[in-house]
Image 1: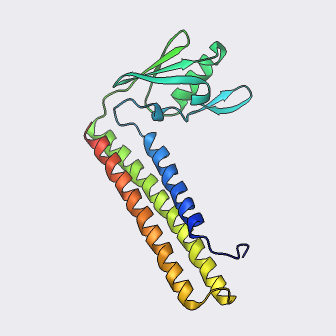
Image 2: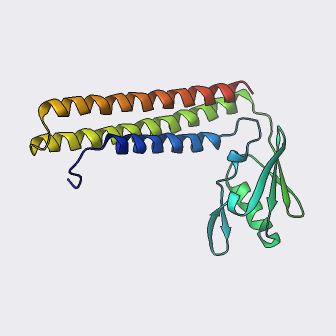
Image 3: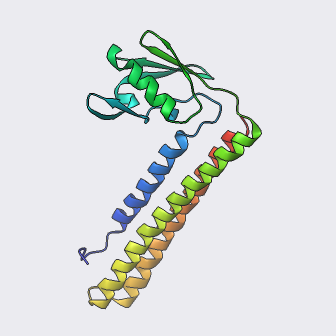
Length: 187
């Protein structure tokens, strides 16, 4: 085992990373309402590599159901258009010079339920990531106790702290999921 000391703050930081990842994934779910988060991380083949859309264009929301993507380099307009179409978001870009207009269509009930299922899948991934961090922390504590670097009481106390951090992170995942589910179903 590489680590020889227990750092609860490091575990909490890793759990926060899982939550940040979940927030980003949920922001990319289409709710029938325009949001820059819907397209900003789409990967575009540009300049010999893949780049996120927000590094090639300005994304704005002029109306609740419309996104404007202002591509900075005229030669990249076609590549951006192709990447948006390939992202399978159900968005069809309309090109006007260097600006791509993306109309956000209404969602039907069936599509909303599908999106909620995807949100649940993302949330489960975040829960699993948080549990992995917990497992790493508990394994480290077990090794430290076995190597007589911490006492059994310290092990139990710190294991309780790890569980408390885990419970807090899982509760945050549930809160994010509930908010996104409500947003998807009540647009």
